[in-house]
Length: 153
Image (cartoon, rainbow, N blue to C red; front, side):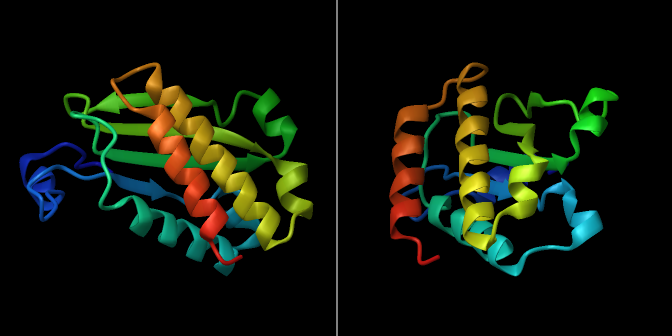
């Protein structure tokens, strides 16, 4: 995500229609993945989300969204670690969102439940982005729900 918004990256995002498209990158949950490993089904869910949104657009300027979900115990949040944030960079072409997911809910969830928590985090991230840049949140949310309904968990 360091190169968000560069000219060569923008050229790579052009679709066959000649328009810019959306790139949705979701990292494995910070803290949790380091301690408990990556859930293969969650990884696959995020990969398919990326592919689903790849040919869509929701903004004239924003074309890359990077989401870093954090799944850590409450004590680490209380100590000041893992603050939620939204950064808009690259002349408003890239958003980087760090947000928290409840550790206890994620820990006890099966892969299906973890995927739902990731989906909710993506929706929350999009809502936060909407307040910072021209972004069609309603259409994005509708597409996210459509993807989720059709996804084979």
